[in-house]
Amino acid sequence: MPTSILFSGHMIDMPDRPSPRFPPKLAFPAGRRIHAAIASFLHGDPSEPVLGFASGARGGDILFHEECRAQRIDTVIILPFSPEEFIRSSVELAESDPGDWRRRFRKLWDETPETRREIMDLPHNDRAYGLCNERLITRARAYGPVHLIALWDGQKGDGHGGTANMVAQADSNGTPDVISPRSLEPHP
Image 1 (cartoon, one colour):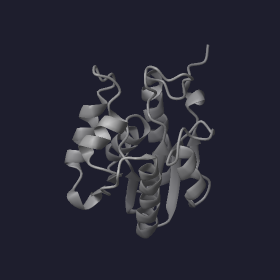
Image 2 (cartoon, rainbow, N blue to C red):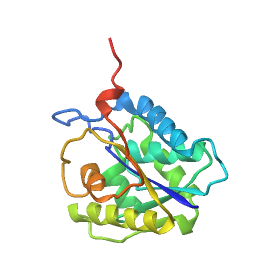
Image 3 (cartoon, one colour):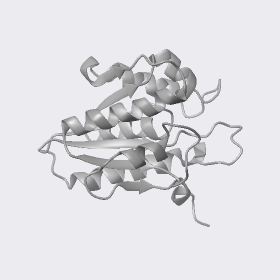
Image 4 (spheres, one colour):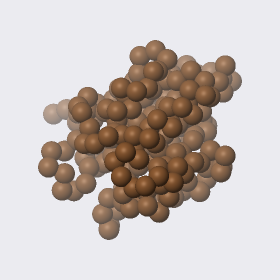
């Protein structure tokens, strides 16, 4: 039976974020934890058709797509508006782009078949992100039972359409895998 892995996660913090939530230094450990969550869900059975669903923001989304593809799982990318506008609002971190998020997004987008890319052409506002979450949930449910992986601090988000919104809306198959950025901090 086809199964969906739906992902939502925090973006890497901007340098001026007042209270850190997902600092850049946690990107590598987050990728490892996302990889483990995907692998544990698969139970080593490569014969089951699994498809991953996420948007494409810097941090969690990009890490999810990369880790799915490393495990030979195709993914669907849904954007609320054009890739260029999305890069400006949700991918670019700074002019120097630590983490190379712009290049990584472009590579994922360009390597994704058109049938697995969707641009919603919404106006650029906070509501667009919530509508994008709804579309991701709808597409994931249409493919098969949904398993949710969330890179989430457990707090209410900065605006409509964030990770807290997705976790509240997504009926997942079983208990969602929630990865707290705080749990990724190195222990002294």
